[in-house]
Structures are given as structure tokens and as C-alpha cells.
Length: 213
Image (cartoon, rainbow, N blue to C red):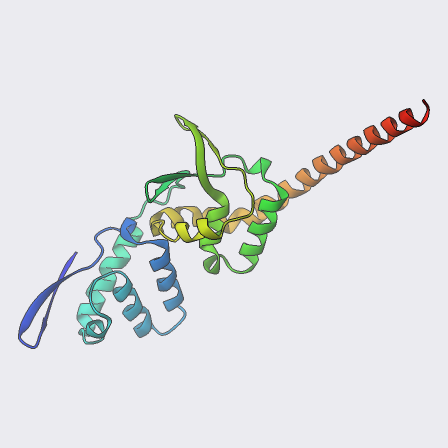
């Protein structure tokens, strides 16, 4: 979207996003943060983040011009594809959404739970870094992602380059993730406890066998 602004007798053309997929997660987080302030500040930060119009010049725009730009941005956001993107590409590298939450590890669960409690909006890059991991093997729609080791700081920075469209498609899932995982975790713990019990019995049996020799 092109916007022409006249100042001091000169007209200059500026660019405003033409599709929501152009918005990165990092920019979108700035917009979310601006929504907690006044409507005036929200419009200022949104237009500044989603265009190449200098911030000072945005402040000088007429109310009608601001309304037109904000309305168009809202339309683009409403037109986004809301279907969960299981495979995304960031800087030419493919990442896959966790393919089987039933097999989630305790470490993954603990980190996700912490990030959700801290506020999803405040932890989106970290949440994405846990649930979207590099694909190590893929065939058609089936893929395997890297094992989780908890070291997500670098990947979280990479996730900031995701498009807001990719992130928002997963937001509904994130909102319901807490309740889903609360169902999965007890089953996981029971399986782990049963395995630990069997392993302990095996060790005790082996020890008794060693002592009887």
C-alpha cells in the first residue's frame, strides 16, 4: 500500500504493509504492547511499525489519514490465514510444530507452563521456540524435529522473525494448550512412575540375585 504525504510543498511516497504476512513477530509484539496505552499512541506505534513513514511525520498526519491507514491495516489482519502452520520457514530454515503432544517431555511441559503463566503475549518467541523446532527429517507431510534440550535462547531470537500470520495461526492453540497439557501430564507421569517402579523392582531382583550367589 502506497501513501503520499505532502509536507512543505513537497509530496513523498511511503510504503505501508500490503499483506499481514509481511509483519514479523517482533513488530507485532510492539503493536500488542502499544494496545495497552491510549488509542492515539496505539495508532502512532502501529503505523510506525508497519510502514516506512518516520515517526515524527506520523504525528503530523491528519486524523482522517490515520483512520484510513489503520482501517486498511485492520482489514489485512482480518484477511490472514488462521489455519495452524505446522511447518514454517524462517531465514530459509524449516521448523516443524511439535508433531505429537502426547509424547511431550516433562522438560517441555515445564517450560511451556512457565511461559503461559508469564503471559502468552510476553513469551511468544519462547513458546514458539519450544513448539517449533528444526526439522531433521521429512517425507511428504511427515517430519521429525530436533529433540528438546531446553536451550532455546538463540532459537527464540530466530522466532522473532516469524510472520505475525504464522504466529497468530497458533495463538488459539496456545490459549487452549494449558488445559490440553494438564490432561496429558498425569498420563505421562503415571507412565513414568510405572516404568520407575518396574525398573526399581528389576534392580532389587538383580541385587537379591547377586547376594544369593
